[in-house]
Length: 124
Image 1 (cartoon, rainbow, N blue to C red):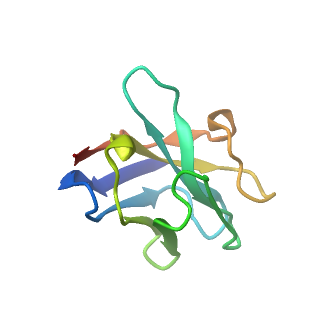
Image 2: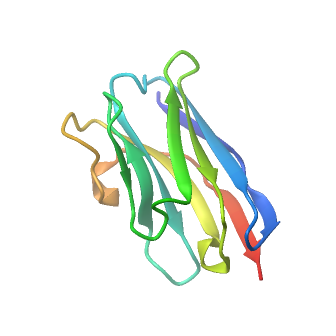
């Protein structure tokens, strides 16, 4: 059984930094794509950043240059370092993994396992 467990997140002032991490069991990030999505109240769940099984990364335009996704295959963990945070980054952040072998899927329906999410709140 595949399980994804997120940690990190919390409350930070605008301009600050936070990091979130996601450790997987039952599936290896060295062989599967992974991504961070976020969902704010009343909005759809959108991709923030993703990494393919072979290390290619994708960033949404809204976070490009501010967020960095990395992966540690030995720890089977992905990380999202979030800098220069803005109030509009406030959301629940979800880790997900996809069986896709082609790049980084950007739609939520391409991901078959999800974590429970972790809250990130950016105050103005």
